[in-house]
Length: 339
Image (tube, rainbow, N blue to C red; front, top):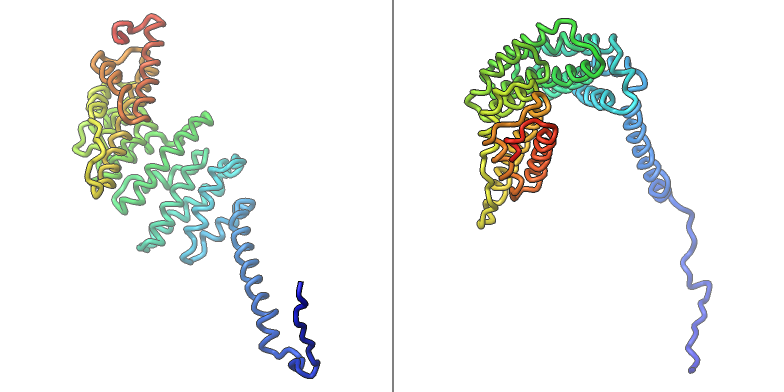
């Protein structure tokens, strides 16, 4: 191998070594330090919000402040009430009462806009997660309607969750009649989404007044209201739901279009149809469990057809209903319907 040329450097040729100036030191130490400090502050803020639930009164103090970020505290509280280890929060009567006052004050303030609306909605959701009657009064007052339909809807939906939690705890609202009357009033709203939510909640609340109103809502002009009313009647074990359930089961599948431009719209329609049919099948199952009687023969025939539906969720739900009907027939009831 040939020797390579090597060059030796004269030290006098190297540039002189100069001490670092202030600008260099700032770039080297101060800027990274500021970035690290910002990261630490952000982490501490999230850590504080995540552990706010360790002190329920911290939520109250935050929600009482007049600033635009209060809705975040309401959201965090609702999430904590749904999370594991939330039994103490769900049973905190003073917290529920104070949240009700904050919600009432926010509605009475006359404030409008997205921040206020979001705060009211999350406060309703938080109250619905409790398992004590003290959470009901402010929700009942808002559910009657007459104000913002979005807030009324959130209150009605929260009453459904609260009623479920109370039932699981073996309790009922202190004034069950007032709860039912408020949801019935909401079901008479001109806002379709509020009527739809009220129909669902009436099925959870139950009672003669709720059933009477559901028998009217099952003929509502809006499809979503009719569907929720039918499922609610089924939950109450009322066979009058079969007519509406049959209409829901009869919705045909919408095949995917050849035109790619229409894909999103077609998928949305197909998804909605599958959701309605699966809910109707769930309603049929609820009625079978409640009445211990087979569905009408026409309903069973339609369910058999749906067991071959192109949509997997529909097929599996229909198959489950058929198995339930067959088990009933095997126990000596409804053999004719199962054939």
